[in-house]
Length: 175
Image (cartoon, rainbow, N blue to C red; front, side, top):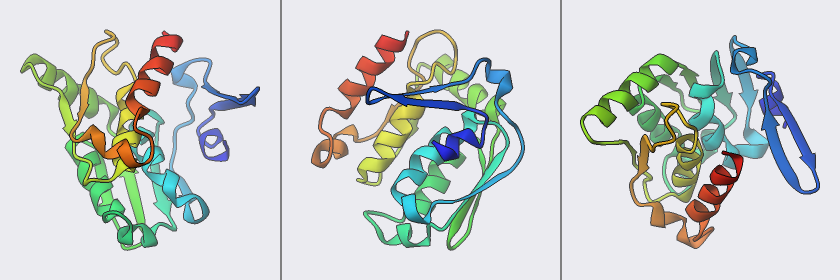
């Protein structure tokens, strides 16, 4: 909740339901943010994946130990965000993402015009699949159609086998 509030987003956590809201996307606070994810390092991938939607640049620090998890999560995240047209600086213990939302849209539109989707690799790591699944549920091209695909979504099987079905249910309920 604190991390998202840095961007001017309101988080309501009532009745075991979490809702993140912003009156108008133009109200998202711009500017650089530096956030230490050491105590919540498993969540840095989701934050990094949605960073292109948040405005401003972000430096995610305190995550050096994630290079030794299922995969080198810092290097993997840098590679995948770069494929989406974001400017990424990889450091031994941090990741800086300078967002380029217009480049993200341009690449998604180009892929769509070629009959394709932008594609994310998971490195056999469920957190990549889940984090970019959340990004992909955003209606980037404002037409309700998919624009992002996840290679090997089945890697979520060990922790949350029905993740993508649950995500689709939530997305459909919010439409």
